Image 1 (cartoon, rainbow, N blue to C red):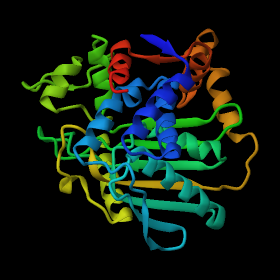
Image 2 (image 1 turned 180 degrees about the horizontal axis):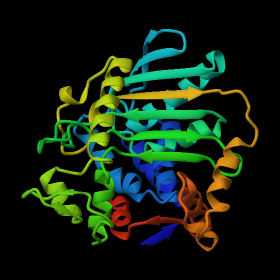
Image 3 (image 1 turned 60 degrees about the vertical axis):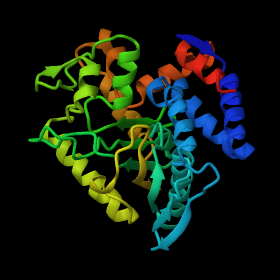
Length: 330
């Protein structure tokens, strides 16, 4: 692992994107979203994915110049067509529109169809929380997860993000419906590590902590077994219905990246309730009977904040081989 200043990473990625048809402003925004993922310790959905992002453009799956287009307005709910534009920029603009709608209606919802992989979905939860709003967003994916009771990948691992603003540090959940996302499996594989708990099945149907065997079998384990499977199905249905786009069963699998997918972005502008989020988080560290282990108690976003502080001091953590590969693209 090497550590690189944030500005160096964003400038390098931005230059590469400009060379591939991005405007300067859009290149900077997209590069920043990749850098933010590494800054926050989510390497699997940051620079690790940059080569596949470029490969999707080269194959014509992503149009670097395309921007979302409004196709239906229902007041607090709107539908937009992503027009196969860059997934992270489509998602950013969709959450921005949901935030604007929440200013007008108290709640704003954008259904986005015909878009591409958003890279790190958590970025858009943080975007909402930074604006002082509660944010919820999710995406469907190509079929990559077996529903409970099947061995065939018929549903998606459909990442879900929920964010609550808090002055001392936002509370942000970012999770896939599989115990480990495919990006996380890839990161464990790159680092030559086993998973901390079984994360899926091998081709013989045995539970395993080997990330490579899980990727080969395409049988990751749903979170909560049948509960995660059920939630994945409902998230897919809602994404397709609210956006007017494709459901997972309609999405053609692509070895490079998810394409032609559906997403939902919701922002709430709730009445002020001073101190509630702080009281909830503080309750996790006080009177828990294990005060000496309080720092080890996890809540969504805690590790992110710790990683962010460290990265801003030492530079962004980047896999050395990944960085070499990116520099070869300049």
